[in-house]
Image (tube, rainbow, N blue to C red; front, side, top):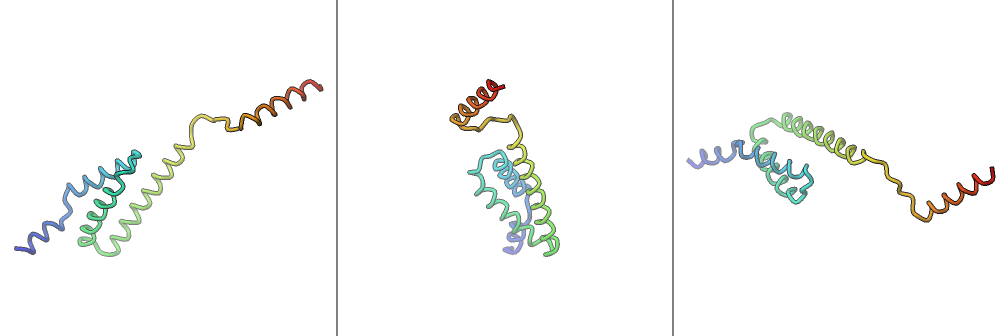
Length: 108
């Protein structure tokens, strides 16, 4: 009877997947306080999956997840870099540049 309960506990349940994806979604949205939940739920899911899959399947699965994560992170980083261009020149340099342009134009 105890082995049946242990087998039930070790099955991957829909709730395990839902908790893991929910935590991942929160982290993706920028709520990094959910990172601990993601690691905990992902670890539980990984531990349960380890009992079902062969080592080769586990390696390939983790590699696929890592690839998707790298691609997603790369896209998010590129999104942050896009947008309006802003002038980041310090104010002092702007005054000097403005003065040198007006002197240059006056000499012509």
